[in-house]
Length: 312
Image 1 (spheres, one colour):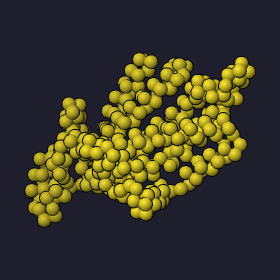
Image 2 (cartoon, one colour):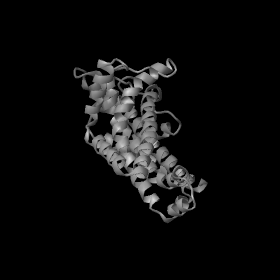
Image 3 (cartoon, helix red, strand yellow):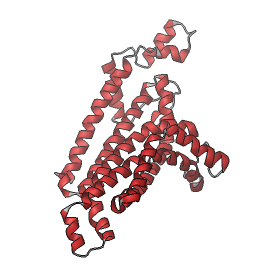
Image 4 (cartoon, one colour):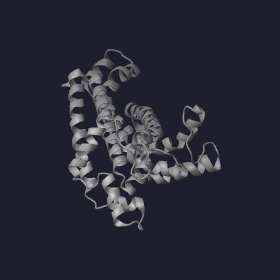
């Protein structure tokens, strides 16, 4: 297991380096006159050139990247070109919002998907068809429509949850829970639809194995067989899909954060990308890649723990 973790970490480090280089070069291709954007259209060209030189934009792109990388490995991600705010602090202020959403969606998806998938795979019949209909409906409904319905019903009509805004956990745990409930619910619908079908299919396949019939012939109860044997072997495909959907939530969080007025990473990405603020964009790219590496590592470790053959 340690060798598996070491290989994944080494591969993740190489991936971070390659993605950072490609991202910086791609961001440097557009001929954006940052100095002109900062000083305004009325500024004279000498002042614009001086501003670009102060930001280091008059140097070759590879030299700029090497300078950025040398600071990044020391934990210095620079300052925003447009707001002069420290990039690390800016991201740290917004990261808890997005992490709250992603962890909430992952937890809700994991619990409900396994409950529905196991229920459908074991009971079959009408229960199976009901879960499959729910899965198709969850995929078919557009995400923005689900979000709007949740807001209209539970925020506007019933007033159970706030329609917009975010309360940090350290200020009020209850307020934090109420502000993320509707965003988590809107993001969980499609995730549950996909993962529950994966769990259902895996459970059905495992229940058809010879060793399950042998266990039943020996008199073991179905709940014990499912909890101790079936779930252990059927969880791997669902964990892979759950990890992929966790990473995909970064994209889905953009729309949800804007609708609910949440100051998270998603809305921040849209704002700073439109400006062409390379220090902030590079930090967000690296944060995303790091998240992908860590999630894949956790998924591999869990699968290796459930199935020792996967460690090879």
